[in-house]
Image (cartoon, rainbow, N blue to C red):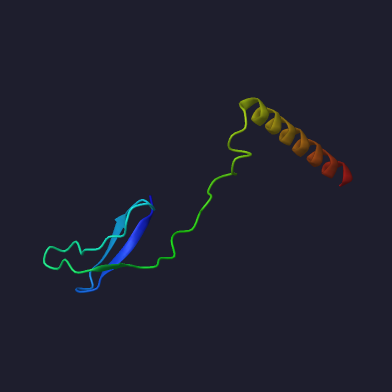
Length: 88
C-alpha cells in the first residue's frame, strides 16, 4: 500500500497516510483542534533496490544446478592456475 503525504491548509500540519490507490483523498486535518482542509502533496516516492548475489536467475536455481556450477567453477579455476604455473 502506498504512503501519501498530506498538509493541512489551515494549520500547516504535515502527516503521512497509508492508503490504497482506490481510496478517496483525505479531506480533514487529523489534529483535534484544527479539522481544516488538507491537500495531498506530490512525492518522489522511493527507489527500487536489489540487494544480494543476483536476482531470479541465480536466487531460484535448483540445488543440483548450484552443485554443478560450483564443480565447474572449481575445475575452471584449477585449470587456469595450472596453465599460469606452466607458462612461468
